[in-house]
Length: 128
Image (cartoon, rainbow, N blue to C red; front, side, top):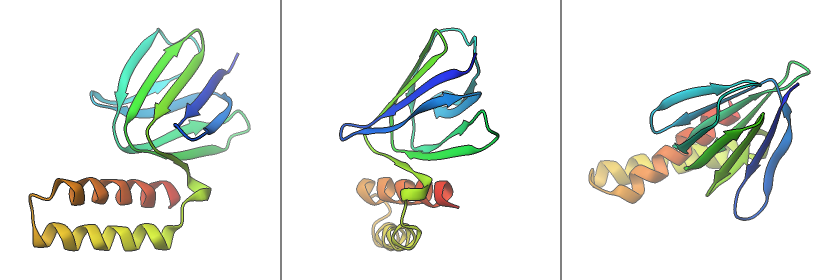
């Protein structure tokens, strides 16, 4: 029996489907979920969630913080911002990365620039 996966952002359901494996990064590190996984709750950090589909494909999703909950072969990911890899504008993400790097070079303590840098790097990783 596969996992039922839902990834939801405030605006919409980003992904919904079945999977053999979900790999996510939490504040405690990277973790994988397969059918039969024990109940789990964790804080998501900005990273790429990888969903191994039953047909052998992989869905990559850029998430920018949130929560993951696992119970009864159901994985619920709640994220402030989430983007499917195919929806990411790679050129725009590269420009955002360059802008964030320039802002950090101007002010190394700029926390907004550091967050923008992390988001851009995550988007680029998901889209690549």
